[in-house]
Amino acid sequence: MNWQEFWNHRAMQEHPLSSVGRIVQGKTMSELSLHKIAELIAEQLHLQAHDTLLDVCCGNGELTILLKKFGNQISAVDFSPLLIEQAQKKYGNQIDWHCADASKFKFHQQFDCILLYFSFQYFESNKQALAVLKNLAEHLKPDGRILIGDIPDSAKKSIYYKGFWANLKCKYHTLIGKNDMGRFWNKKQLLTLCKKAGLEGLAIDQQAWQPYAAYRFDLFIQKSKRV
Ligand SMILES: C[S@@+](CC[C@H](N)C(=O)[O-])C[C@H]1O[C@@H](n2cnc3c(N)ncnc32)[C@H](O)[C@@H]1O
View 1 (cartoon, rainbow, N blue to C red):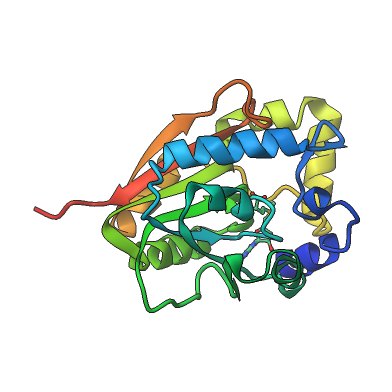
View 2: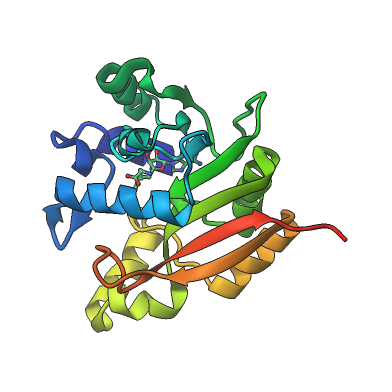
């Protein structure tokens, strides 16, 4: 099963937050947690009321819609037709929804801010990740800001896969194509890819209250300044 099939299948879950994998210690994440995450994102991106925002890998839009209260014109993209359909049905034209791959979407505008949250692990090769970063760079205004949030940290992989059996299970699931976690990223490698895409990244440790803080980090990105 590829990731697109995986997310189309996942979209059929009953709870909208489960449909986008928002599970914390075996339970669906609370609405309150998601609200806190949206507020932190607005702060990290320095979102202003007049800013345009693009949410890439938006899923069914449960997080996207919470950013609307910051008063922005928002466009959102995801490659799962089912999740986009759900978003459209529930939230209509409050957001400009699009179904497309993160490395291939095309808009005839550049944005002040771009968000890619809780999804970078699904770009498993450097080539794919670079194509995504280049596409984000193309859609970012010269002084724009990007936040790639909730990236699994390869240095903390053993916290997620604790112990011998968890590790073995991970290897087995990867082997049979059933790994539902995706790639743990090395910070340095990711920052190098950002540079190749003409971007300058800054890795940020998550705050202790963030649900996956033990093994994930955030990345704040701007366009490289040419001299
Ligand atoms: C874990 S969900 C996160 C949804 C939302 N960003 C959030 O934070 O709640 C991951 C999303 O990434 C999307 N996705 C994964 N790979 C993608 C790709 N190559 N292009 C576009 N969307 C992708 C999936 O369809 C899914 O909706």
